[in-house]
Image 1 (tube, rainbow, N blue to C red):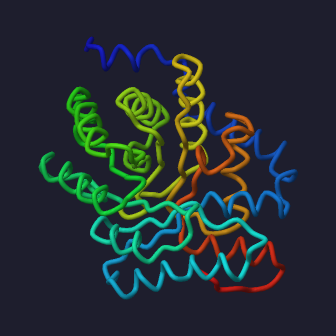
Image 2 (image 1 turned 90 degrees about the vertical axis):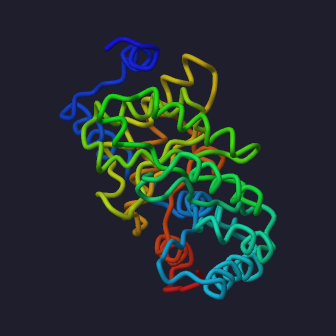
Image 3 (image 1 turned 135 degrees about the vertical axis):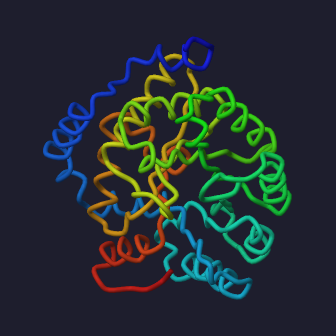
Length: 294
């Protein structure tokens, strides 16, 4: 098939060979992981966390309490930078915006029929617009994997473009759901489609249905971000999410991004990890004691 969407993807030189990707990730970690296992890196990663609560049992009270923990952290640990954002369902955007007292922490919302992306486009756009109206700084939507696998890439791109428009000034993260895409080729194609459709970030996974983040997916996505930057001059961020809970796991993603994209991608304007348990584990390793702050 030849159209502007398939042609744009076909022009990518990023490897789609799964064996090559696996070998490159192993090489990066064997050569560079150890040098990043230190408290300065742990502190940097803590400041890149999207602290997330996306539970069936979320309620106004529980989300307000969750937000207050972020407020309290700023008072209890003034020597440390806080998390990057609080990520919640879109109906809680206004609540988090009201309760949150920390100016540097963003309000992020999943949207667009998260986590499946299965709904009317009009519903997805309305949900995104309402979240932004409620105070969301960032919107995380899900790439339409079904339409992509059917080959309807124009529909995939148009859906991202429409939701990007609904974001207004808010940043748009597109969740590729790499566990459903499975192969390096599909992950590369989805990355390219998302960025050329207006994504400010590309994100690995919802962490809800399919396998979560993988280092191999992160490597492919980072290579696509690098290529896109070289071709356009525009920097797109990377977010890992789904199953990242230990300090070592987080440092592995940090290391891959550092080696592929460089140190300029290592602050929270371009690098995020979506997690809940990770923040306490990092903080414990920074302070040298077991803590439960978040």
